[in-house]
Length: 418
Image 1 (cartoon, one colour):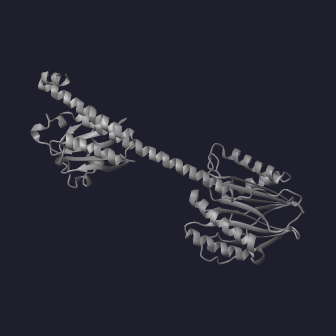
Image 2: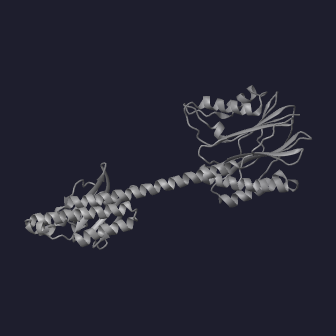
Image 3: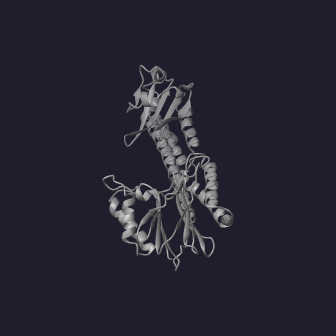
C-alpha cells in the first residue's frame, strides 16, 4: 500500500519525502552514535559518510574551537588547505551560511560555502565545503538544504564540546582527589602529639593557602633529656613545594632519629643542603630553623638557615634567634655556618613561624610584621601555648580584615619550664 501511495504521488513530493526520510535517518544515526558514547573519531566518520557518500560532497574542512584554539577535526579533498587557513583572521567574521563568490583570501576561493556553527552566540566551529558545480549550487539537495547540514554539524560539534568538557571535569575531579590525598599525606609530616607536661608546653598551628603547601614544623624527643625542634618553609607554593618538603622531612628524620649521636648541627645543615640541591636542581630553596635543646643543662643550640627569626621571650626581654647561614639549596656549598648556644632562664617561650604570618597584609597593603607578633606574645606570655597560638591567629584575622591569606602560615610555640 505504501508503495502504491508513493507511485501515485507527484515526483516532487516523492523526492521531498525521500529527502525528509534521509534527514531523519541521518539525525537518528548521529544521535544514536552520541547516545552510545561513541568516540569522537567514530562520530566524525559517520558525519563524513553522510556528507561524502549520501550528499556527494567531495571537499570539506571542519574547524572546531578547542579551549580557545582552532583545530581542524575533519577534512577531505582539501589538499593541505586545512593547514593554511587562519580561522581567527579569515572566518570568525562570518555569522551566517555564506556562499563564497570571490574572496581576497586565496585559500577561501578554493571553497564554495562557509557554514558557521554557533552556540549561545559563541562560535564553536566553521565548516567549509568546496568543489561544487556553479550550476547546481542553488538546486543540489546537498546545497539547497545547507541549514540541515548546519544542524547536523552543530549537533556533532556540541557533542564533541560536551565530551571535552566532561573530560575536563573528570580530570579536575581526579586532580582534586589527588590533591586531597596529598593533603592527607602531608598531615603525616607534622607531629601528632606535642608535649604538654612539667618540662614542655608545645603547640602548633598551620594554615595553607592551597590544599597542600610548603611549610613544616617538628618536635622530636631524642632521649629523656634532649629534644630536637625545627620549622621550615619552601620557596614557592603548591604541589611541587609540598613534594620537596616531604622529601626534606624524610631526610631530616633519617638523620635525627638514627644518627643524632654522631652528627652535629653544622654537619646536619651541610647534609641537608646537599639533599635540597639534589632534589630541587637549583629551582627552589628551603629556609630552616633547627634547635637542639638539652633539658638537663637548660641550653639550646640552634642554626637559622635563612629563616624568619624565631622569638625567644622571657619576662625581661625578647631575643631574635638569627645566627646561622643562608637558606638550604641557595648554593651548592654554604660558605659559612654559625652555631649559637643559649642558656635558658626561668619560663622561656620560643615562637617559631613562617613568613606567611609576618607578610600578611591588611586592607591598606600594610604587612603584619614582627612587631605585632612580639606584642601579642608579650601580652599573653602566661597563657598556655595553645591559647597563645589562638591569640596570634585572632590578631591576624582582625588585622587582615577581608584580605585573603597570601601564603602558607605556620606557628609553633614552645614554653620551657625550668
